[in-house]
Amino acid sequence: MKTNAVRLYGKEDIRLEQFELPEIRDDEILAEVVTDSLCISTYKAITQAEKHKKVPEDISEHPIIIGHEFCGVILKVGKKWAGQYQEGDKFIIQPNIGDQRGYAPGYSFPYMGGDATKIIFSNQVMENGSLLKYNGDSFFEGSLVEPLSCVVGAFNAQYHIRKMYSYDHVMGIKENGTMALLGATGPMGFLAIDLAIHGPKKPSLLVVTGRTQSKLNLAARLYTEEEARKQGVKLLYVNTGKTEDISGSLRSYTEADYGFDDVFIFAPDHALVTAGAKMLAYDGCLNFFSGPADKEFSTEVNFYNVHYNSAHFTGTSGGNTEDMKQSIELIEKKAVDVSKIVTHILGLDQVADVTKALPKLAGGKKVVYTHKRFPLVEVDKMDEMGENKFIAGLQSILKKNGNFWSAEAERFFLEHAPEMEPEGALWAGLHP
Image 1 (spheres, rainbow, N blue to C red):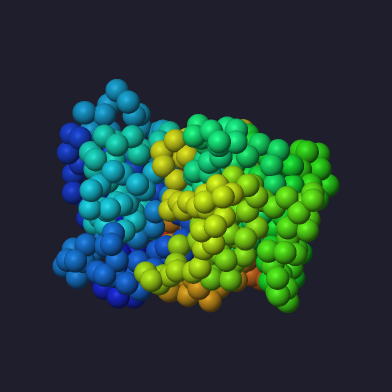
Image 2: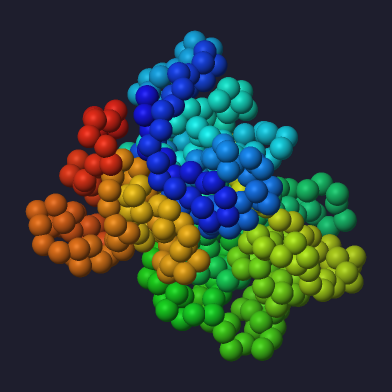
């Protein structure tokens, strides 16, 4: 069976190719990818190539398929897994498959990655419980389970003592506590705002910072102070671009200069880390969320506060399988609206160029429809594509949904957008 896939051969050498997949073995699963969400982590992988921890050294001879935030449909199940998975099941993938080498789909394997039409899941994926069933009403939301799980994992990794002088830790953010999201004006920060407002545990005060007013304005439009109030959360947006004393300024928003129980750092910035540490309340927990490219990234930490104020520090890199399951539930129940972070769509034919340009591209998540040929387009500028029945129909749906991408827009797009290949696909009949 042929597949179209974007493969990595070397530093910034990624190519869209068609090739033959081998027959699956009894312990493997053949699947069809429908959507993949492009991630800056993939950009890091293609620029570092063989030097990247997850990328094998022999990619020049055995190229790997890129993309790790994907959703699709199971086509064929090997005998070993016939009782657990069925043809036609929708799936998402947990990229952390328990490989001791750190290998993962989208980074390490010749037949397993998200920027492809058809792929093969190896036995290791199912053995690790990393192939998860998904019953959401759109594929693109399934592709955003993985990024949401990173935020869910970060919230779950927080910890606080049950009471003063206790060594009994309560995992997760502090219920009805004070929370600050520093530098949280990108798509992951937006997901964190949404989760803080609508998740199972909520702070009483949520302060979100950024340095660009237009990005803060967008966040305030997507996640309003009024909606937060309905959920029992006081939400404040603060521009710290010209603030000299960030910690002092932000602590003033807490009662009696209490400080913050939970602080998240969404940009690998020395000043933000230092300010975040100073902002911690007694038993406060700081999560360094944003992964730095610099292996020597470090900054000063006040160990007086670690000793006397029980300050905690943690960091997370992706979510685990339980985080993924929680994220699936949040999306399926529509508690968190991941459609708000989708700013662009594109076809598989554009993936190579767009992935190379990711750091220069504004906006949020870029969702790939792997069976389609389609230019990179901003969702709220679809009308600039020109005039034809397809674009007019799509634009009508988008306007009805506040210019957000939606399950309805996806169904229309899958039915009418130009195909990468002529044969039919199983996903065509799956939407309700």
